[in-house]
Structure formats: structure tokens, C-alpha cells
Amino acid sequence: MARHLKPLVAGNWKMNGLARSQSEFRKMVNAGASISGAKCELLICPPAQMLYLLNTVRGRSRRIGLGGQDCHAEVSGAHTGDISAEMLKDAGATYVIVGHSERRQDHAEGSTSVLQKVKAAERAGLRAIVCVGETEKERDAGKTLRVIGDQLKRSLPDGRTAASTVIAYEPVWAIGTGRTPTVSEVGAVHKFIRRKLAGRFGPEGEEMRLLYGGSVKPENADELLSIANVNGALIGGASLTAKDFLAIAAVYNS
Ligand code: PGA
Image (cartoon, rainbow, N blue to C red; front, side):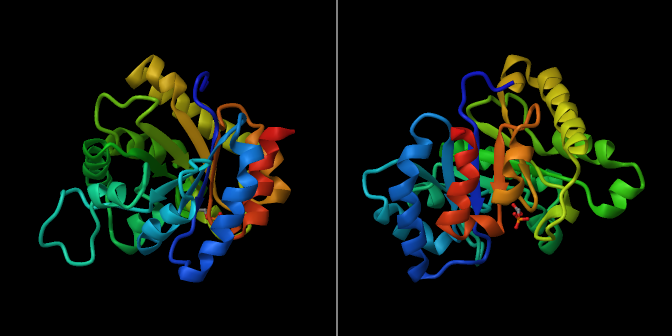
């Protein structure tokens, strides 16, 4: 169990966000004070071109953290269209999501590449949110735990700590579909992940935060965030408005 670190409520804006979306972020920063004060940590991962802008919007307030959605393994160089962990850090990020299923699928990213990105995050001083999750086909074939065990093993370099690493369990079939696994299904996977992390990283693995992601909304947040070994959420669609994002985070206030 994460005994020392606050739960993390993280929003992934994906490929959504124009300069005008800063108003939604401003609302989050203003209203987020009451929520992030004691009970949980708030994070928004906007598209990279918005990081610097949102960092300016929040001014000196650190009520809401900022993160990238992906990074290249190298520091800099001839990699057209890519962004490095150092660049994200420079623009105001303290976290980076790596291995999201949309990256794994759309860009054929395998766990070997995810591992290099986790190392890059560490090199740049960013915390990595490492995503794992099974497809519907894998779940139907009874392979969920095997797939997740393999992703965890191959995506995480040795020496991970609770401070440097967050794991997000996101069943691929639950992302953006409105469907979620049952409480017992989420509980079983998170228990499995906890056991694997504790086995490999000892007390650091015991404390690492495990997020659930996939169709988290204000209506189901209470139920999902109360499950044992669920230490926060990774939220896509519902993180685009301050109202829904803060309503989810408010679960930790009740
Ligand atoms: P969703 O996305 O909340 O829109 O299902 C979750 C994610 O992909 O992180």
C-alpha cells in the first residue's frame, strides 16, 4: 500500500487542447486548491505544445502538476517529431506517461522501447507513469495476468522507487469506451501488480502508486478509487473539463 505518497489523480488530454483550453486548466488550478491540499495530488498531461503555456498559467502555484504524454529515449538529436524528457522538463513537466496503449498500438511501441523511455525520464528527473493493460482478446483468452506480468517485467528497469515510478493499469478495451471492468476484476489485477512490484522492488514496490485508467468518470470514481491497491486514476475524456476532473478528485475529500 502507498503509505507515504498521496494518491495521484492524473488527466491525460491526449491529442486535445488548443491555446484556448488554458481556461479549463485555469479553473482547475483555482478550484484545485481545496482538493490537492491534503488528500491527493493532481496532474494534467496536456499535448506537449501546451506545457509551457499551462506552466505560465499556473504561475507559482504548484497545486496541479504538469506532465508529458510520451518522450523519446534520447536527450536530443535528429528525431523529427519527437520530444525528449529533458524538453518536457524544461517546459514545466514533472511527470511523463510512457507506454500508453495508444502509443503501443499507433506507434508499435514495445516494452523494450518503453523501458528506454522510463530510463530517459529518470535521467531528466521526471517521474514515469508506466501504462500496462490487456486487450479484449487477451482478456477473453484468459491471458490478462500473463500479459500484464510480461509488460511490467519488460517495461521497468531495475531499481525503480515509489517516488520515481507510477504504474497505470488500463485495460485497452475500457479506454474511451464507457465500459469498465468489475470491482473484483480491477481488484484482482491491482493485487497481482502489487505482488509483482513488491517481489521485484521490495518496500519501494509496496509503496508505488497504482492507478486505474479506462472510462473513469465522476459517476464511477467513488467505486473504482475505493478498491484495494488503487492509489489514484489516469483519466482521459473526463479530464478535459475542470468540472469532471475535479469531481473525480473530490472522491478523496469525502
Ligand atoms: P478514458 O482514457 O478515460 O477516456 O477512457 C483513459 C486513458 O487512456 O488514459
